Image (tube, rainbow, N blue to C red; front, side, top):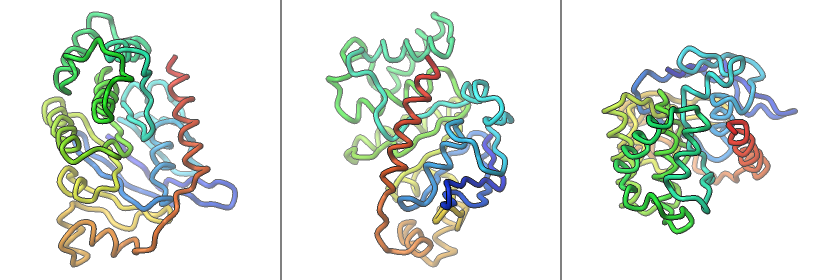
Length: 264
């Protein structure tokens, strides 16, 4: 469903992603982990049409996103790390506008909106402005919105960042239900290692632009003689603190706005 072959992205003298190869099977929950600045965000941008690779090849459900951008975008939904909802609009209106931008027929998007808002426990708040929602409610709405056009893949970039454990657990329960019932392929990033261990079927760890390990959570723990995934992660990437590249974060926010604008 997702494949990257010898994927490389160079910014000036910086090789942000260096000869990365991995694949994600249909219906799989796949975690892409790494320290700050490791190359996760740049890789996601190449997968989701926001950046063109310097070299290498990407396919999303058999479509090359560097050549057929609009077609590729219909195959996936994405939840950015930064909020992208319109707080002045209601939950229903945020969903409805998204469906219209993806040219989902009116009756289909209304049925789909109702089903998703009920699944994510937001139906009773459908007519409330999103600015009144808690952080957890907003994240659930963003994921519901990303699934409205029935994509085959959903990209979740740090979807539970800042949420309390109860909300995180509830959100993943909903995502796993959709994965099982609709066969949606899930590509996620997270810094919560126990979350990746519990949710993901396979994991790739990237550091300094290169994939340093791939496998099931159990495989990674066994290979690194670790009791927990976090221990295995630290053995593979080191324990020094990484500073996030602020300019890269700014670029991601700008590209997210461009991507949303292009849909309009």
